[in-house]
Amino acid sequence: MQQDYTYTTEAGATITLPPFSTIPFGVIRKLRNEPEQEQVFMLVEELADDAALAEMDKLGMAEIGVLFAGWQEQAQVTVGESSASSDS
Image (tube, rainbow, N blue to C red):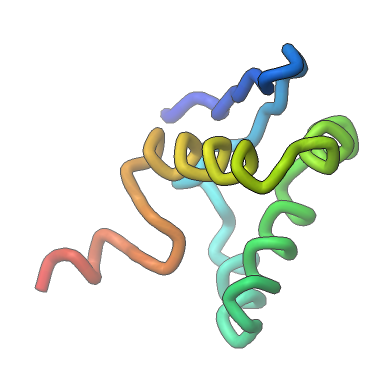
């Protein structure tokens, strides 16, 4: 089983997110028809606890990009891509 993703901000705060690979199918299903930007916000709001959201709200967009890239890299996926889509 994959570990939670933990990111330490430039300010030294810790943000913990569940493994990207454990996102429940129901969450993905609900997001599928939303615009891409809205999907990101809804996903984070669904999965992150209040403390993580509070810390994320303090970050600049560049650091948010680093956090998301690391989260996806840990699971070896990118948003909008599944292992099935790369098998063709």
